[in-house]
Structure formats: structure tokens, C-alpha cells
View: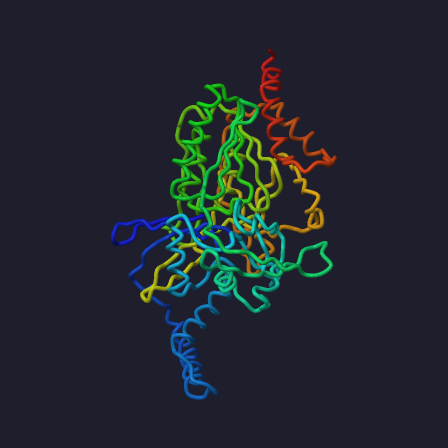
Length: 456
């Protein structure tokens, strides 16, 4: 999730961390004042200075001061949580380029799990997705070079490149007897935030792949198109957040605000007072009347979890799928003087009821495990990595004062449906999107249970 602030030149730079860990909860800020260091840190800096001096004078080969300093900064940040990192000028420039909504690469979201480079998700309609790269796949080599000693940023840099160029990644997957090579041709990765479709002529389906600068406006256009296509007879909505790694905080809040009439959407708690914020819902209109099912899975992270958590806490809709990733931290990106950037975890966020998502995720109301196509059954046992699996992951943090959101229209009888669906153990033989099918079934029965509850 990207949390955004104004630059001194009054421009707002929105940064997508799409190629880094999970589009993770990030704030963008401009800092011109160097924070005051505590007196005790100067003794430690003397030690650093001594080591730097020895390297420059006594190391067997000639060294460049900037390389040494950059290496030290990277090492320092690697002692923190997995979402804090240092970005050299070239890497930071690439992140800024992604503001334009496109970059060139493979379309993979990756993370470090137990020291192994692991796929979190393959973005739809990208080279990785088309080649069959799956969540949970371990990338053990890139162009023949082992990834064991590569950092996450270095790995991303090796997989990105100009459109038309090729890269070979070696995958190990549970169920495979030996690693498998995938030679992929890099392409422009489309950053299309919203897709929509009318199901059964009366149920709207809207998928948000990530929360970008124009997600809310695209969402409103999608809803309008669904209303027109259904001739004003929409009976429910399915909001698909599966494999959505996050994005901009303000866009997640705006999407949630469409469904919730009042109360808190999300709270942010940091060490400093100016890092403490609350975002509230406002009365919006027609969306509050639609029955709602939200689809999530282990690739739903950060901003996606904010939306799902708020809807769940306000009893506004039914959350269906599998447990989400569990990223409940906020990062701030600080541009540095030489063109480099610092990404630093600065706060945690909490759902309206005071729940921390960090390393826990959102547990769906209706747990439905996806069915894999026949040619993917070899990977059916592969476990999708989650926040708690990452090296140096933050703990869950202390709870914030709870608020009790008021129910907003979910029928009591729908709880019975949820329990029955959660007990479902049969696996269809055909390769279908069984999670989406169950969502449609819930919407079909919604009015039935509502009428029963009202005694009509």
C-alpha cells in the first residue's frame, strides 16, 4: 500500500512497488532535514569509520567509497524488517518510472521465504502468468546463476529488462522431481487496475488487480458500465481481490468508502504522532444496497487486506476464499540527495475493530480452497508464502482501542450459508473457478434468506 505525501514542489509522486514484495503499504514523502542523531550513535559511527578506513588502506584490492557506503547501508537495512530497503539511484528511478503505469519485465511478485526467492503471484496476462509460473514456486536460478546469495532487489533487477529480451528462470516446485527451466521473453507489463464482467445478466463482477492512482475512477466507470449492461437490474456485486498485492492507501480507502456508510475504514499507528491517522467512511449512495461478496487468497496483501478487513468488520459483505497474506505495515519512501531512495517501515495499520493484520491476515467468512487445472495438480500442495514466512517479519503489534462497527445489511441467514459452504469438502473434477462460482451462488440465495428473515 502506498501512502502519499506532497513533495516540496507540490507534486505528488505515486510509487508502485509492484515488482518488489507485494505492493506493499508505502508512503511517499520528501525529506530535506536530516534527523538528529542520539549522542550514543556517534561512538558507533566511529567504529564504522575505523572499519571503512581499514578497508580503504589495507584491503587487497582498490575499493570505491560509494560502493562501500551503499553496501553498508544495505546491510544496515537488512537487519530490519523485510520491507525496509535501500534503493540506489537506478533502482529508485525505475520505481518512479512505474508511476506511469507500465514497466518491462516478467510480471512476477516475489518475496524471500526461508532464504529462498519465492513467487507470491504471477500478474495476469504477463509472460510469467502465460508460462504457468505459480504462487509458491521457488526461483533457484536466474540465467543459470543461483539466487541464494542475491537480495530481493538484485533478483528483481536481474529479471527485469527491455521488451523482447529473454531470461531463463529455474523453478523448483513441490511435486517436481527436479528443477524446471522456464525461458521467458520480457514484455511491457500492463498495469491495468480494474476489470469487470456481468455474470448471469444480473450480478456484477469487478476485479481489482492492484490499487493505483486511477483505481477509484476506473471502478466507478466499471460499475456504471455494469449498471447499463444489466439495464439497472444488478442484484449483487463480487469484488475480486485475489492476488492483489496492494497499492495506494487512498485508493483502498476510496473503494471501501463506496460500500460503507459510516465509521472507521482503517487506523494507522506509528511511533510519532504525525504517523497516527484514521480514515472514515461517508454516506455514498447506491453501493450500500448491493449484496457483496469479496474474493481473497494468499496473494491478497496490504491495501487489499484493508478493504477486506473493513468490509468484514462492518458486516457489510461476505469474505470468501483463503487466508490473506498478512501484511499490516506501512512503509515511507524517502528520496535521498544523490538520487537514491530509502524505503522504511514507519507504522502499522489496523482494521475498524482494532485487529492487526500483520503476520495474521484476514480469515475469510467462507473458506473455499481453489481447484487447480489438471496440468497444475503437481503443484497443488505448494504453500503460498505469507507475511509470517518472510525473514525478519514484524510481530503483530499491540492492539488499538476497538470500535464496534454496526451491521450494514448482511442477512443473519447468510451466516448459515457461510457455515455450510465452509464444510464443503468435495472437489469438482473440472478445472473451474470454484471460488467465483460459490460467490455467485451466495448472491443467488441472498434474497431468499433475506425474505425468510423478514418473514415474507
